[in-house]
Length: 147
Image (cartoon, rainbow, N blue to C red):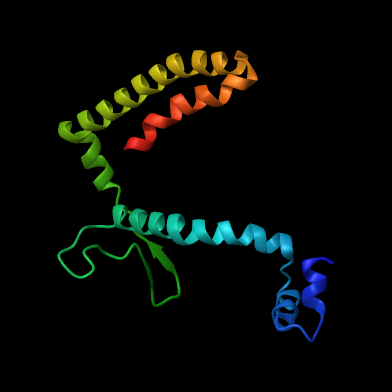
């Protein structure tokens, strides 16, 4: 008996939930997909949108400390005012530019070193006898447990 058949029985306490989900149009697969999408929306997209709004607006001494990026006129038109001056300042100030380029350099070096060390190690583990693969993986993973 499937979950939906179990929930279909009107005597069951979850029957109201099944009827509501059927009315809304969500099936079991839709619910499974909706859970991580809702998680991403709440904890990634909404904060990302807030940061983008602050970055693209004009700084003000007020509460909130930035100007609105859009407003409606009396004619019903939407006016969008984006300010790229913050990004222009970041790219023209040598302190921020050097920090950004240094971060990119460190990321590239660490990526290359990880590939140089990781690929031969993965090849060695893949070619090792199956009885020893777990031991080799444990020797790699164990140091990360200490931090």
